[in-house]
Length: 59
Image 1 (cartoon, rainbow, N blue to C red):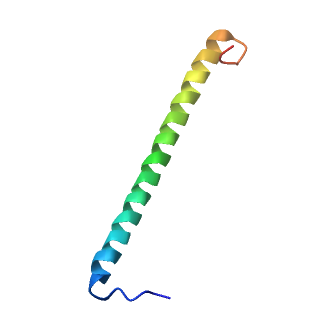
Image 2 (tube, one colour):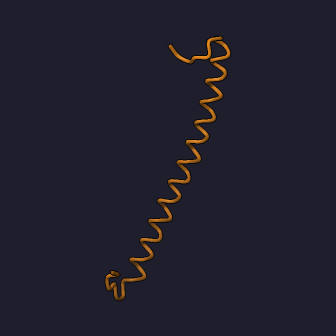
Image 3 (cartoon, rainbow, N blue to C red):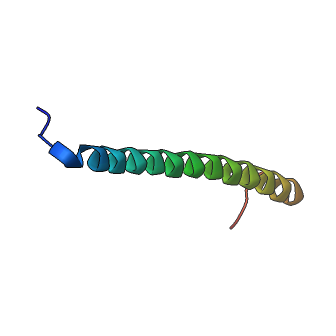
């Protein structure tokens, strides 16, 4: 059931729209950054694993 927002309907619905857009932007940026970090980590692990010869990074 939709509440009666009367004259504030535009303001309230606009605030919801802006909030949802910002949340979507944050999620998209986070996913992109996670993918970039995952690629860089795989590169570093491949480089380190190649030097050690045993395929394991770290101790």
